[in-house]
Length: 167
Image (cartoon, rainbow, N blue to C red; front, side):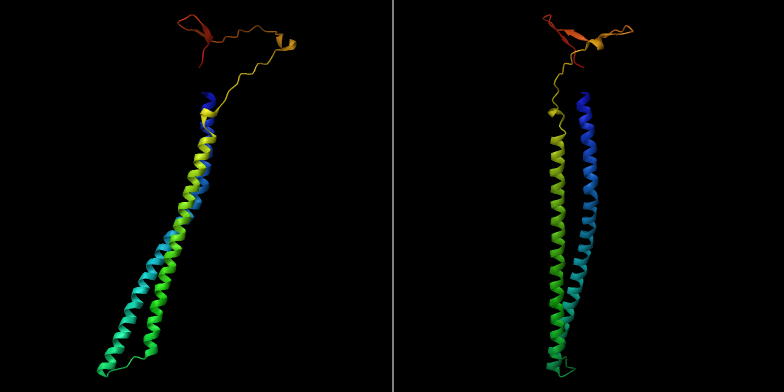
């Protein structure tokens, strides 16, 4: 029981160190993910705005051509459509970056779980193997200036067999 407790205590210390190590990495990734999510939202907003602007440029050009009002040049319309297309590409790029960060976060969590499982197995109290070791006394060990009593507890089972008492 004593050795099992010591192994559990050491395991708990190692697990805490491991969690601390991964905690800072996970917090850093979570911060990057929050930033990436806000970038995706910002890019989506800009994309919607540019699509509306491009749509109104096209509508204005068509109406201007039919009604003979102010004309919007084809290059202005093309520029608006090109800008809207670029904004859509920016949204896709931002979403890809977010997906990569989330994948990295999942991989880091899986790595943490693997390391925790390894620690659990390494510091398993069931793996403790105790073997008795007899150390024969030396003649110099047998001298004593002071008398002492050594008591070791024994137990007698129901059949009358004696054995050392386990604690």
